[in-house]
Image (cartoon, rainbow, N blue to C red):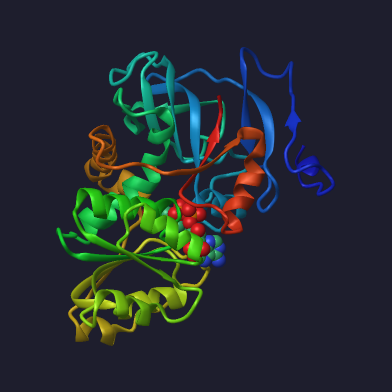
Length: 350
Ligand SMILES: NC(=O)c1ccc[n+]([C@@H]2O[C@H](COP(=O)([O-])OP(=O)(O)OC[C@H]3O[C@@H](n4cnc5c(N)ncnc54)[C@H](OP(=O)(O)O)[C@@H]3O)[C@@H](O)[C@H]2O)c1
């Protein structure tokens, strides 16, 4: 099978039926059998749920930059092959284990799973599921875990963003970027300067609530931010690009400014010039949202409950840029890698 999966002559997606193998019902899942190769769609056999586990019928699964990194072997976490990617999903509960008390059959839920969301069904520990309120659609809900969980912890828990402060966000039209704009503007009453790689992305960021924008593919980010925010600079910077963009964001900070490192989408990890931290009493910090699940579960869980609550109250409006079918998963990955995506990219499993 592995030999088949890496044959480049095969179409990027195909359905491999393994009828007759295993017992009971089967469901379709995306499978990474070899790193840096297209994913396959396979039919896999159900396994029984353990006492604390829940079987969920997946409606939507987020396609995250991190999923692509995992399938290339370039992510912090490296699951053993073969695996099904997909770290967040929304859906309905199909079956619960004997010890499950938090959800019941038919409940609408969002979940965070290690690596099994890109499938028609998945099994999750009951601790990693949150009930979706009635007013929130399963499509909107699927945007919340990674993007809004991260935005909320970056802005609230790490940077302690205050009303009327100015926030600079890079990769601003991406899934996390738009979530940062939404939470900063509509929940925290901060002002946002959006930095992105094209005029169209800048326009979208402004439509979604940013007060100003900078296209960093056209000259100095720091100079453009200075024109928008004044010589004092910005209070908070949330960076996902790394390299020179990170350094320019750092140099754009005001006295006692805070910069939060979320990722390195541009591929380069910059070193922090410590003298810049000293001169303006700046704090530079990181945020790895998923790590809170193991290290500080109450904080992790609160980020999801807050996202659901803000959404139910109509204070945030998750933005879905594109929806692909399961069998189009490789096209969805390309869409993200080629920087064509805006907002959240979802797989629809229904
Ligand atoms: N630390 C955490 O817990 C956490 C959580 C969520 C996401 N992240 C990280 O944050 C980053 C953005 O995630 P996302 O889910 O918002 O992704 P996304 O929607 O795919 O956005 C990524 C954006 O990065 C920018 N980018 C700059 N250089 C790029 C390059 N060489 N290749 C591809 N994109 C490039 C692009 O925007 P422009 O064209 O506008 O530059 C692109 O739209 C990723 O690095 C991700 O791993 C971290």
